[in-house]
Length: 161
Image (cartoon, rainbow, N blue to C red; front, side, top):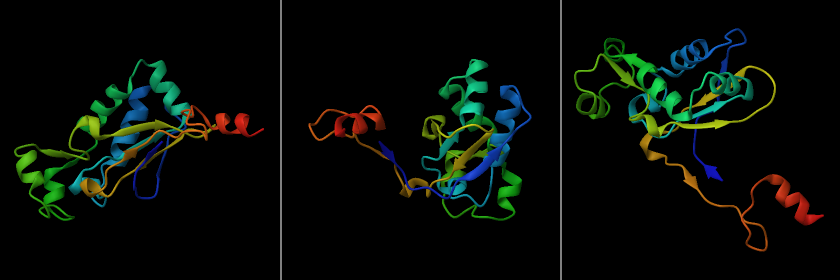
């Protein structure tokens, strides 16, 4: 089980795109928001893909690492926009880490983006910015009463019957 402090989910809906370019463009432009803590403090944000969006991305041959790299490259805020307001300058990260870049990413490096698949029918996913570097995810194994690692929720049901 992984636990992470995050903002409320930001809905990402696209009921029209039937291929990865449309879905990824929608996600990237939705993520690039100056008001997000991740915009200036980075951290480990979460992308929760709905099963239908995930299926389209998988069908098109994209791995989680492919999605992370795409979003790191495209979910960015233009430097000129950043410098006109928001939290730019609150930390030295932007000036030092991404000096000379014309647009700033929403997470420090591709591997910082957590991607999970959750939900049911419907072309909705969500983006959950975290509280920046002050928040780190924690992962622990969940075990049954006898110490056996649980694989699914059904493991608890079948052992308690």
